[in-house]
Length: 96
Image: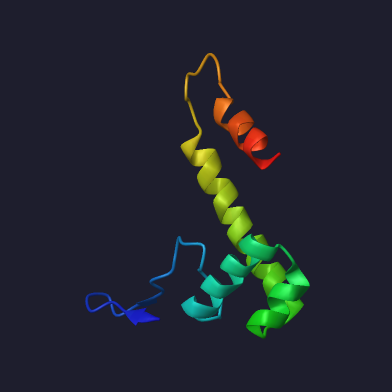
């Protein structure tokens, strides 16, 4: 929490970010998110980082909601009339 020198009110520097109201350190949050992205297992991530499974699920819920709101905000009024998915097919062929 920080203190405003003008109005003397406290505020969080994390307000409006995905990390607002999460009590873990940035290092732990980063480790949780990268481990989830790499292995995808909630229980495995909790075990690796050393936190409770409920904590990992709460982080997924909070950050997922923030990501959804950001996505909805950014994808407004695009005005596209067609979409091409060439890159997806290239990736699928490459994986086969």
